[in-house]
Image (cartoon, rainbow, N blue to C red; front, side, top):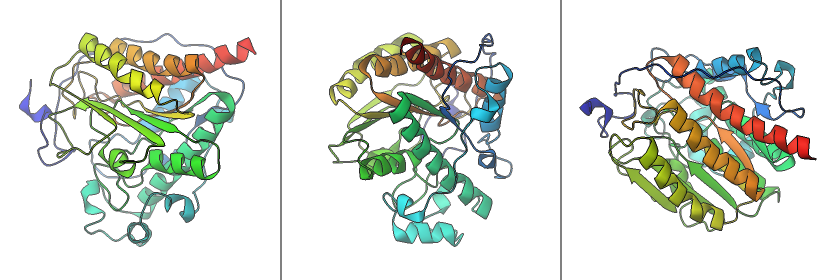
Length: 336
């Protein structure tokens, strides 16, 4: 195992990996008649030379449109949320820093620049996850081709994350009386430390994080259930751990489940040190999303991380996740 792919080092941006080709997926036909996909072209903001491939959002959307999985005109675009929604999670001082583009102690651990377009992209992503949650509660599921910024804390940024859209969407749904209990299943290679801290001690939200233990962030926060995996864990061991970890999630009986479907447990991710294949990641997605469908739990997919040497591999992983979620919705429509 390359030592640059493990440990905290100086943050997310300082890792490297190697590439092996991903398997291809055959195009599919249109599946869902009701709009259930959320995306904005403004997610692709200029962050300069960076390991974070912000162009992946548009590339995943294009892949799904070109192969016929979704219709472009059905994709829902979010508008910027009112500040009071963000304030359900984030402190006034921190939101003031973002609005004022003040680079300082509350913002510099983002490891990103701080510009107006970047702030807009992150606030739009929060509204995108809110919108996807609403659609999921109406339809049974939805896919946000963005979001999953789980390192953002209530009062500061971390690890490429300015706004914790997962937490904001849950708090908005609770405030509107749409849900009583929620869950976050975070399967990014990095622990969702911001999400864990925001919901620490909140019995209305169950948080699960399965991640590479010897990787960013350090120290870790406390989720309701943390499963820290050793370097190099592959498909079989990962899926066995996931099967065990999902049992308490189902037992918590959430009305809404936000699935952080990070592509970075992939064996060739530049910022990860696990050894999952593309097929293993697809099996992971099926366990979560089919489990939600069987239990009639509304599920929202957020893309989370993904930093493969070839961006095409990250796009393929994310596209497979979206196909599974949309296929389950299509099956639900066909049975009604």
